[in-house]
Image (cartoon, rainbow, N blue to C red):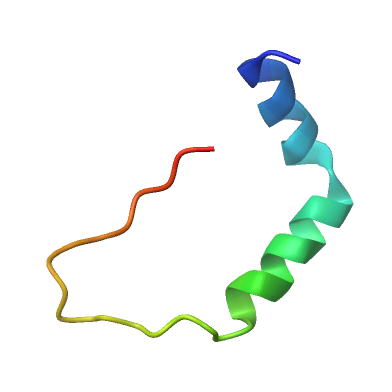
Length: 43
């Protein structure tokens, strides 16, 4: 799959949406509200 096809697939994948939602709300990441730096990830 090229990047566009991969993105389209992931946008429609309910299992991926659910896994992301669970991970995003798990609260395992400390919040750095005063930080001037923000992490950037490329997949």
